[in-house]
Length: 225
Image (cartoon, rainbow, N blue to C red):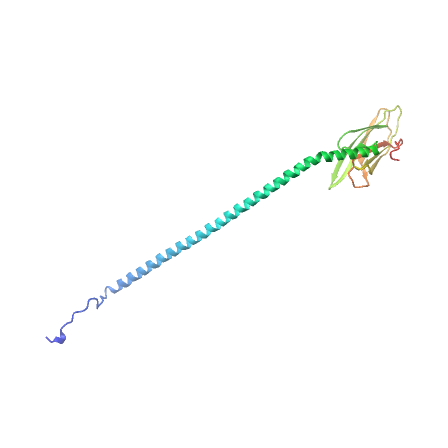
């Protein structure tokens, strides 16, 4: 046999089995797909962890801000409570002084005009003048505007029939006349008879009335002519 034709040993792995080559490629692709899937899972977990961390950090900031804000509101509330307590104390101390001042002014006004009576709303006020028995004042509030209605009870305590007329005057806290009303004697009043008449007082100065004076028109007292 010729030496040139003698088969040389084939190196191990020098030839690839055609039947095994597709399997090797499939195994390589499987490993690559598995690695990509693991990497995707890791990325998702990392993103969730980052989102959770950011959410917890934002929640922590909100809690800190809320605590600081609540502390500030509590301090502000304490300051307001202290101011309110101080104001109430000052008012309680000033109340008697104001009442004392009001009484002094009332006495001074009545001393200057002794016939004036306190105009107390919704109370029967005795007059006990000629043909005048009592009067009731009522405060009316219409569309934010105050008006004052009177109900005057006239009584004839004499033995004769009369037709009395009356005048009502109202004054502010300083004793300045601010309004009046005329009660016309249109109907006769028999002996022992009483009758009531009511109307609204005509205020020509926009002030609150504090005092009043009433008299029969035919027998003025000389206080107001």
